[in-house]
Length: 76
Length: 259
View 1 (tube, each protein chain N blue to C red):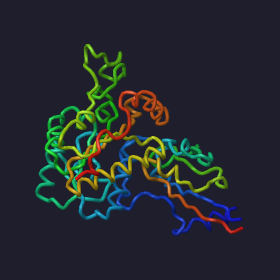
View 2 (cartoon, rainbow over the protein chains, first blue to last red):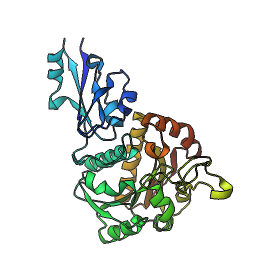
View 3 (tube, rainbow over the protein chains, first blue to last red):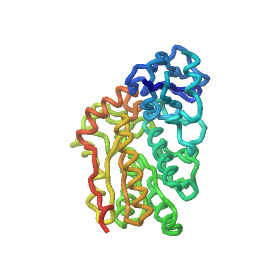
């Protein structure tokens, strides 16, 4: 049976670390990194990548439009 | 697992990304500010309606003053509070354009009250997007006309007292009473569902403007986490618990279906 897989790519330079996407993610994929970007903001990253379902909740609530969301039906 | 992710990351699998009309320039807004989400919605709706070359925004004085840097359409900057007056002129001279203003509560509900109410009452075919965060964000969190009773700001550190400061102003309710308005609604952008409703409201307002049905007002109840001295997620929670009681969400007037 095909399984839906998702993935996100975060524009870490644009991200300001507001963490609204962390709250919006239903799968707890995203976490705030311990590193900061060139502007001095901590940024978010996908830590539980396998759990991502590509629902785009994170992208929709992101005020800075930093997240690109991908979704694909996997033919295992 | 790595090869799986590589497989997914191809352009045909993109389900969500920043709208093309949004410039790549870094936005000056504080982390978690609602302005960014509303900017995205405006850009998405204009793209979906195919009005990239036919839209004119009027930006306010306030945090959103630099809106012209972020959305790649024509913009005109107006003097403080005068955006609806400027938009009136643009729409009358250029009736085939989508003309909208993007104003905060300090701009629309305080210094620009007269211009806003009269433009709405004249039934100008413009849309006013009203970002209400109950505070003056840009200047450092002073009390605004929309500040809630009891809310603490830098100029009312003991909370707003009605006997001293008067009551919060419900501009949207006022607009709904005017003959000239065709669509008046109050939305918010704190959750995925709310963002989707807000986008539909903006689209409906823009369509009503283009169809010449009258003026539209879309209020977005927003957060100002820096002004409120909260984290972005705390600010969303505070807004849900306090702002929605006084500023209930939903359509206040909708005559767009009538002739």
